[in-house]
Image 1 (spheres, one colour):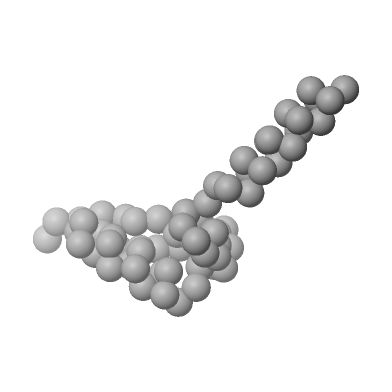
Image 2 (tube, helix red, strand yellow):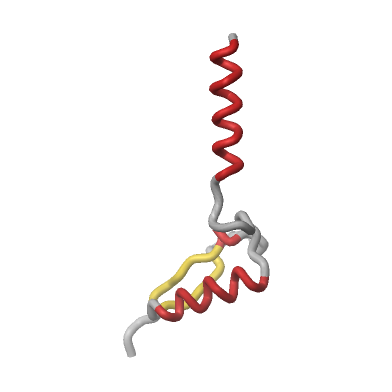
Length: 68
């Protein structure tokens, strides 16, 4: 029983430790600005995924601009 409780505790703590940065998955103005700048440096454009929740950073993706 103690082993089961320990495993559950470790899995729970591991889930809390994940996330892109100190802000977690929250898409604040500053986090989005950094992500937008990083994406632009790679030649892309940061866009919201279809049906994405705009308040979550994971709802955005860097799309490469087509060559003109």
